Length: 130
Image (cartoon, rainbow, N blue to C red; front, top):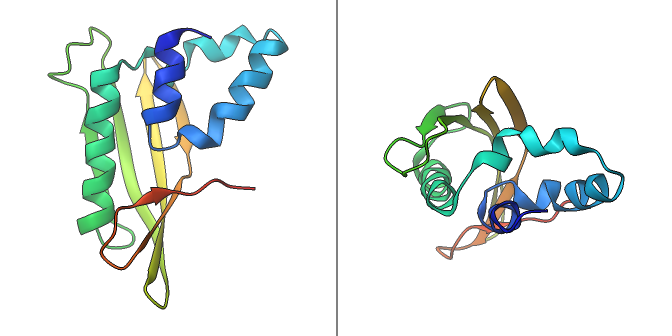
């Protein structure tokens, strides 16, 4: 797995959803995963989409969709995404939001379903799914 891909998995909103799958896929020599949209992302793309996800978590209502494009990040590969806040749940001071993120690059698309939670006015934290 390239360093760029490894960094991407740590920074991208849905990274924890795929880290285990990609590691296993590399071990099984499933090279087709090398051409997924996430494999074309660079650190500046990662930071940009991270900010777009945080913005969506903070301001979008359930069912609202925003778009992200990596324009201006210096990447020659055009990557875009739709970010949809699917649902919000409250439990005391804890708030959790489920997202549906679709990444697109070079004719390929990738669906991510991350969940983020926060306590009170704290920072959003990506939740590991079991």
